[in-house]
Image (cartoon, rainbow, N blue to C red; front, top):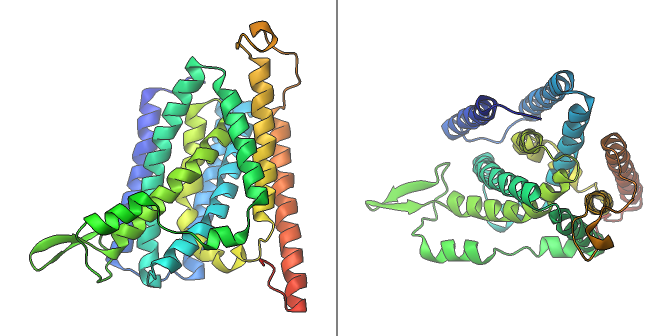
Amino acid sequence: MVVPTWVWLLTLAVAAAVLTFDVIMVARRPHVPTTREVSITLGIYVAAAVIFGIALWLTEGGDRGTEFFAGWLTEYSLSVDNLFIFIIIMAKFSVPQKFQQTALLWGIIIAIVLRTIFIFVGAAAINQFAWVFYIFGAFLIYTAVKLATGSDDEEEDWEPNGVVKWFQKSVPSTSEWSSKLFTKENGKRVATPIFIVVVALGMTDLLFALDSIPAIYGLTKEPYIVLTANLFALMGLRQLYFLIGGLLKKLVYMSLGLSVLLAFIGVKLILHALHENTLPFINGGEQVAVPEISTVFSLGAIVVILGVTTIASLWKSNKDAKAGIDSRH
């Protein structure tokens, strides 16, 4: 898939324009968005992603279109799980509700920048070293096991990492909340509490990118599809945060479902690595005759895994609610 430079630049320019518009609108009127507001905006983002996927299908073929939809669904599902941590971060820093949009928006901008860097680094590694798929696959399987055996208490015990703590101690700041990242106090430029929250969200997403980027590279080798799938997944994340904040507590099997998803993609990556093998200590550096999992099958598996996870979670939550039991403990 040959993507002209102007298409890359146009894609990034459109994303930057949308984010700039969001920053201006949110900064102008900090508020808690209504369900109608976030539903309409999220609907626009989802519709745009579907239209883009169909356009890609028509112009580049069914394989590329399928890869985009599989990647987009995977990134979206991983982003939904990330919202659990975002909610905890907001609670830890006691962020007023009307400023949560601002924090999320800046956090998403940082996430897009970090993931774009990761995407190009990943593409360069894949082009130079085919064996990197072994590492990606093994890491995803390790992450899947860790996710499946982890507890909800570990998520709730989230604490700021070293980078965030350094900013808290080293950057002059004020305790007054504002929609701006920096303000002036006694004639000096200081950081607002929002700035520290944004740093926390950005550093957290950096860790999330360690599994999300290898995961999508397990579904497509096209950097442009990886980038656009991530952009569409992240662009609607802010609206999703406010729309399904309460519903997240009902998705009790989400971590288990995502662990199955990551393990599936990890196995797919290792099979692909064996098929393209060049390592001399594996089969004498020759390709290994193993079956490969098609993108169409992968898309079907992703839909089934996410569908079963959601249905089972809602069924369990409703059942426990009737019995007066907290499903997440």
